[in-house]
Length: 244
Image (tube, rainbow, N blue to C red; front, side, top):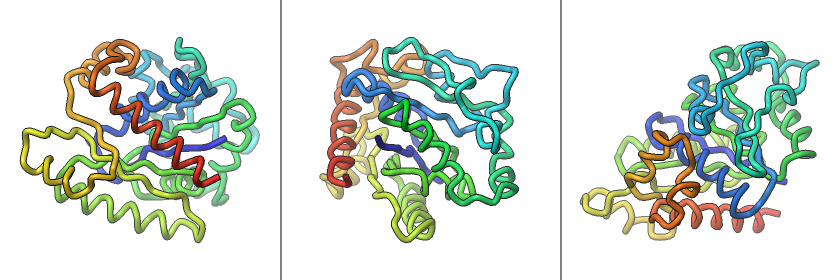
């Protein structure tokens, strides 16, 4: 069992697209029972699979003492892949964690879900607060998407420092170059400077993923984008195997 966070303190880095496509890889390539847990109020992962949250229960209720997430989890239509969608209620999740006062509440809930899922993937909001602290403590691996830019470099340094401060035994961090366009000098230089980092190309298939509300592998399996996500997933599985 493993929990993987897709996290960045910076928005617009391809975080949700990466989370949705990696969840598909987990379920469809590795054939693992996978839960994609959307912790971003925008419910981007839900949109990627054409799923709206149920109106009768708030997503933040999952964090309460006496309620489990079972009634909120939805099937995606993809074998082995379920989704815990977000809604506007989790805009106050930071305050809710603070009110409860348990440093590992998210980790405890995730441990209960481990009974049903082999992989849990967190689609995280671009915040640095108690929500991110809870995610760091709950995760076995933290993936950080990094478009090539000085601001992304600063954001990555911020993430590394925040993860180190979250606990003495923190999860390993895997930086991933995202939205790489090798026709651009800055992008080529970033790739050449970090040849061992996985990368995801800028590709029309990835843009179409949101339009079609499907992961790239579901409709363009032979595309460079789908192959890049598959390679990234292989690197993640290897990283998790080394950790165990």
